[in-house]
Image (tube, rainbow, N blue to C red; front, side, top):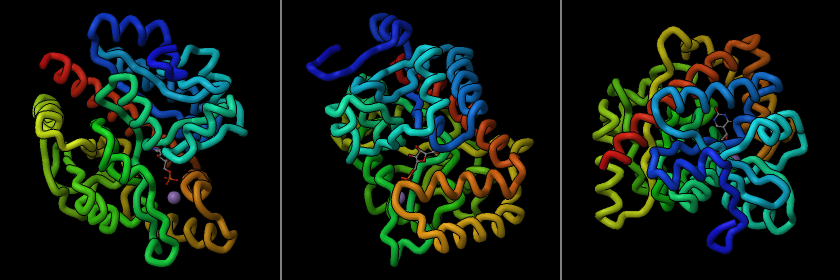
Length: 305
Ligand code: PSU
Ligand code: MN
């Protein structure tokens, strides 16, 4: 425990902090609500290995029995991945989960909060939450966007998930003052596909430049993070044209079944997994691994000063 917070560091993360080594935060909602067992556990381990291979230290974050864990050992990770009664924690839920001594997986928003508390500046995930289609009537806008506006963590994702309304998501990020930085291309990636057809607001191809921008934001006292939009590797992408009808059908099913709130994103991801006969899961695994590697390079550049 530290800082009067119920914060628990894994031995590996504690050593890295003490030695000033570069750290990369990893979320846990993708494990509990984004992928099925046992692929979720394998992927979580592979993502950690990818971070280590690049020369940084992974810190997977989750709340377990009322403690905020920064870095999970094998047993804790496996237990989390196997249970289906884990809470999905965003900014609103974190304190309650801790005081109730409950167990919950952290979304992008909650992982950013935890990473910042732990002094970790870089975080890798699959895709952030954003503005849902039909948000003009449902008002469904992920808390991830507001977190990016206020918590100074650089988040590496393959764009926002293609189930969302990407033009509206970009508009909200612009309103909130969040830099959206595409890597290696001029257009915004669309999670399972490389190209959303939308121009990205900014582009930086060198991890050192992304690290420099992170540092400059801190010096300016801007608060808030950066969204690094890293396209899925070409060999793993699913063409947008193939996905569009499947996404439309999944959204229609969600509406027909009255799926609301936190349940929407996991429902849509599971539907698309079934409709693509698992291809969406393979793509999701590939893009998270790719994001973990880039996040490690950014963390290394940040640590080098
Ligand atoms: N990226 C993935 N799979 C996921 C998520 C991200 O590849 O399941 C999770 C993240 O935790 C993200 C959440 O914060 O989906 C968004 O949920 P919502 O739309 O309810 O804010
Ligand atoms: Mn939502």
